[in-house]
Image (cartoon, rainbow, N blue to C red; front, side):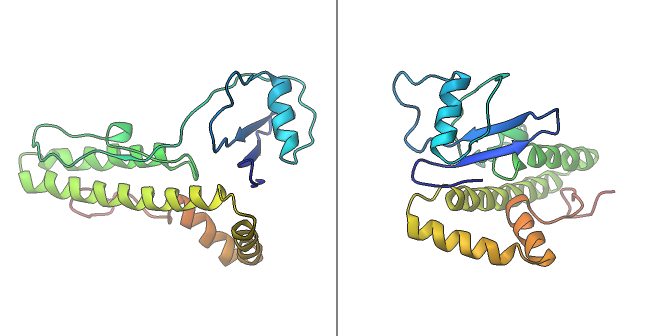
Length: 192
């Protein structure tokens, strides 16, 4: 990861014969008429400090980082899960995980669906989980996309300190991806 005034550059090795996923954060959006050819993307990555040779590009896509949480409309007949209920920054890869927790916990709560309080408890628990994920991914996104040089220096110094110990690395991972825990059903019981 390389952050700077041009935005964030993330290079993720894919362990597939030298392939990597490259994510370029464009804080001001793509320039009008900007190209997404491998050469243009390699030039933009190089401008941010990445000097690897790009031989081929399998695909490109553009996305906006969003934060969304469905309103709690109180309907007893509609249940929202996954991206219909919440959308978060891709930092930490938590969107899919959050949706899977929705599905697993709903499957456990459905046998008690005749009990309105059971589903209400499920909704409260899922909303609390979604709010926690949104807060963590928002904070991580803001931290990784800092544009101010002094703020980036403070972030980088703190990260270097945190990453020197196993406990610090675990704390950082859990702050972005969430703590390890077993999913709970709508009544708060641990599943599995």
